[in-house]
Image 1 (cartoon, rainbow, N blue to C red):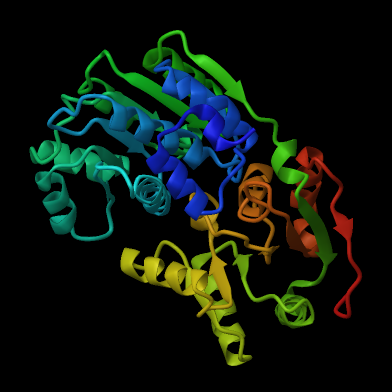
Image 2: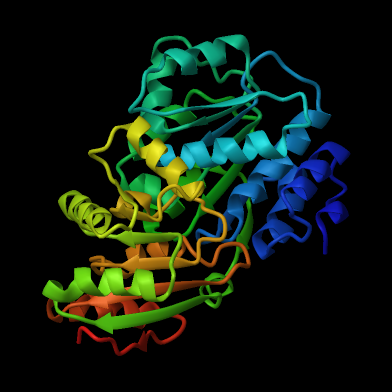
Length: 371
């Protein structure tokens, strides 16, 4: 199957070809025609399956083919700033040959330019809940003309405490809208929200094995005192030019990045204590290979899309197996292959047991010089 089989406009097909996309992923195959039909959609798909394109492409197609109203016609709500930026960049790329305008609004930066873009007139708004409500309260954003609502990573939004913001938002929207719902997991709170938000939705599920099978997962048993030496050894030995290293704390991320830089390995830390501009600068440097290693806390485990990222290293194991899944999902994305390397200290054995319980493949134990 190819994207042309969806009968998309020549403008979108042109953008996809320029990006090198010809064959849709499983979630795209299932979601694109259903979203084009106008039905409410509830999709269960993990990160790395190509879900951003799965809703971006049909929304652009739909808005380009229907009569334009004076106002925001589609809203994509995301849990984090990084994901909002990623979705916006995808919309802008896929729709670059279309007469549609979009922008992203999120906290951590001045709202001046965001408000300026909205006042000029946009078709699609990508937003985090907090900044969106700020702009609504100020009368800058009106959603009276909304045709499509997308909730991306709904489970993450509820985890972050945005349930009240979402319920408040729903009351402000026109009832005759299309609802598109993406969530990696479906806990009880998510099911409750689905019932309130959607009308007779079509349900789509992409099994996690389609993602994890592309990721080679391994574990290195190592004492905490030897982790830094092992990290540098692996980066050099395996000639890693692009790798995300996950640390448990902001202080730890800073310390690891500083140590790598001292050893001549360009690295930057990425965490919540960094300003939004600093985080975007670090991501930009990483994407253009000016930085070899991005040392991140779990704020980066979702919503960051880096094409062809070959390596992820868990310098410290996360507390939950679900977080492990999202971390390693930074590699092996959309049909690519990747490697996830995990360091396990003596005190982290319980976390490793939990990870092994949900892993679709056993983590391979690797011997190394720092045992």
